[in-house]
Image 1 (tube, rainbow over the protein chains, first blue to last red):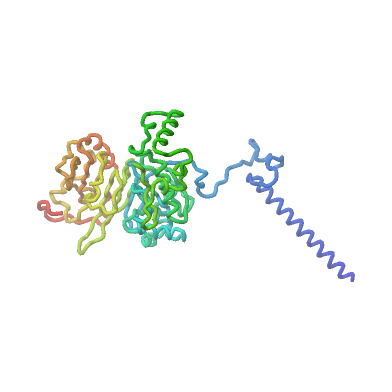
Image 2 (image 1 turned 30 degrees about the horizontal axis):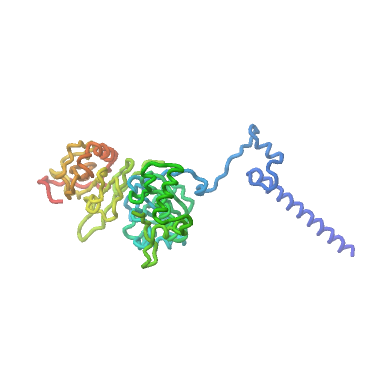
Length: 279
Length: 169
């Protein structure tokens, strides 16, 4: 009986030591999180480490922590430098994305990523991609230092420019693959970027961006705009034009649900077509 | 951000703003031995552009430039056609003529020079989208040509013993 009591006492003591260790470890973690600025609780509450990190405190300095390239929402760079590198067969290739009226869609892909394989496959049928007619598609993989050229060559569709350039991934702050960047040639700036699982999504975004970026064609330019009206006068003039055309307030055509309803759609094969402007 | 640059096959070409390009060697056909070709353009180069711009020059706008640097085989070394040493890097507007085009397209003009540099025989052929705008376009051409450098061949070619007249290329 006495022996049992002694054993139980030892077990209780051992458990107490373990619990105390866990609590101390937990406290250390919380303290570290506060130092990183992501702690739980009240970060403004005074504590020793905050004081140590205050300006002027010796031996401690708070620095921002970044992990990998910034995500699209955290960036403000819109520069679009020329993409230069090598091709999978060892030649050199540079693609300029500024100048002219065209859009350039840069597809940052990898040879090994599972999601990218769908894009590589889709690019083998460029006529069925549904991109606006003046859009140039360029595939950018990382350079031969990070990719195996023969594997990229095996995926590369014939006739499509494929540039292997790790530098371009840095220039365009690509967070991972697949990633798409749309550049407007006239401004030489990025006008869209992001990720997608299917190319239909990308094509829809490109058509949307193309419609937003381009001014109205001469045939569709509103008379009010052409006459230089602005503000309420322009609004009234547009309303008069719409009424003359039989478009009254509440007309369904004023509330399109998709770009297809705005620009029309060639429905034979069910594939989206390049955006078309009236006129 | 750095200036885009092309390096391949012993040709180094930093690209002035607005230019794109490629340096490549075509796959051999039969017993042909292909040599490097460099294309430079201020407009999107089609993938199937022929060596001297076929399929591309017809896409040029009046403000566009197309340039080719085409290497010949070592058998051309020492021939009179390639007697000029060094690539011309400062062309004049007067060097461009509408009738110097390999493919005569209305309004365009071109110039072509044969030379030897770093022990390699080349021709440089430049097309302007508009002969009338040559005074504005030629400085851009010179900005490109002035930055191109050519390295000696990896294995120096022996000089031919005789230098007969220019041959077919």
